[in-house]
Image 1: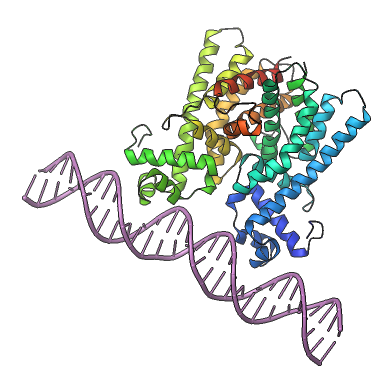
Image 2: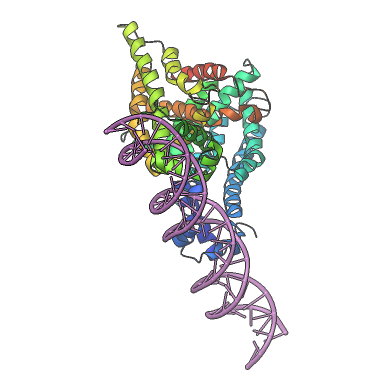
Length: 211
Length: 211
DNA sequence: ACTTGCATTATACGTTTGTTTTATACATTT
DNA sequence: AAATGTATAAAACAAACGTATAATGCAAGT
């Protein structure tokens, strides 16, 4: 069954699961908590998703896929547009980060819980999580890595990969912690300004690579 | 009981717990796995640490404290040494990052498992974990933030905090993923060269703040 | 009207969890 | 030598877990 032909209960489970996983981690939530929050029967998870692991897989894979098709497509368009010349560094980085940062409050679409969930998945590898990352995330990141690489041709392969890893690490870490920005900065930075966060990340990342 | 007057079993538990938590996360390990790996009786955990949560607390708090006293002390020394003038930016960053990056294989001292464990704690908040972070980690990071701030006086408070958060995020993310660098970079970067990783991180972070 | 098929519910099953209890070994002290 | 305090060990506990089964509701198709 496709993800956009979701039945009522199926969607309620997914939404509840995502927000709970976002807050307590993949290993910190029981099916009873999920079904209670979703207001459905316990057995509904096994009926609709076969088991807990498959629920997690579908949830994560779907979120990553939507984000990757968006940004990889945009990168391709940008490259096609500027035929011959380089796509500007800040444009590449913004395309890479935008669909991760820009989360709203719509409970079905990509939202704050989705963002935090992904932040967790990126740093909290589980047996099946690792496989998803190499299959779904790795190719897209290599794609952006190559695009950025052209702006720093003088760097050795190692030096570039280190810098790129740190930038991606900062991005992924931000996914897991943006929700808490206000508390951690004593109110200086906002939790609810993803566009501002994205703008700051872009200037941060550009500085890492520009000569 | 102090942490350096550890009995045999008490130490064996701590070592086994740290490596297991590092690999599977705080919520992904049972006391039976820990005691089995440590080769001690199940009840030994409750006897020596009261309960599972206190075991985690002691483990995490101790690691953070050692690291913080080291680097905060070194920063104070550096500041005292260069009376009047600024401590060089790269020196501040290296002092901040060194005790986190430089992990060896000594099973009792700060090692690769400790580093990965801390990386998890930094991004995987549990009820008692969050408290530890604000009590133990936050003050030290504010200290380094202020030191670095003097090298970027032109930045607005917000802009600076954003950049600093991204740098710290990259550092903490690296703690959780350094062990896997070789696989994720197709062998280009090494897992077992913490000094090299630290060097690369320093140049990365310096670029973020220098004008 | 009856049947078929899918969705939902209630309930039970076998494990595994953290913790507790009881018993045993072994020093040190009196 | 007896007693005491401490560490380890074996076993049992209730609770929570993921999953499986059986019963119920309910609309669509015949």
